[in-house]
Image (cartoon, rainbow, N blue to C red; front, side):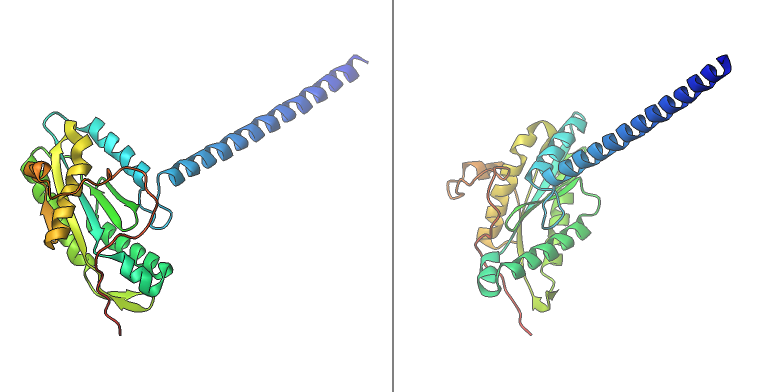
Length: 240
């Protein structure tokens, strides 16, 4: 009799152990699924759905990260690029084709950007490239200017997009500042980009005197929320 009781007790123990193991496995699987969903939500919150680049929130997060990693004396540079007129293309060929142009331009930017700290689309046809910190303002600025010129040249190449040959151009504003002044960085690059666009210079480097120039209009902050949409300007299309 005692043997039957012992056997029953062992069987019950096995059943309970299996049930506990199954419960633990289910809990682990649910935890992994939850972690994956949270990670996907995190990526979606910081990624531009059209290009796969960082969005405004992703850029802001990377700016904070670079500020925290920066050492005393470090300077950080940023490039702000604006296509010279997506609106005309949207009006002429439709927004689907305009989106194709945006995607193509984003790929060209990322190919040239290489190992930049962050590439982002702010919305519409504005893009940002954030560079890693450098020990001097001269080097940070020079590297950013050279990179901006290469990007503008790459964007200007005439290639097929959605079966149609186009040639678009971009204006670039470059700014470099000490890491502790990073909160002014994008505003400075925005002013430089406006200078480049208004003077058709292609690339323009920010200068502190620009802050006192009343000819530069006050625009929204480059990180301010804004609905995606085309900007004004000119885009030259070469049809077959």
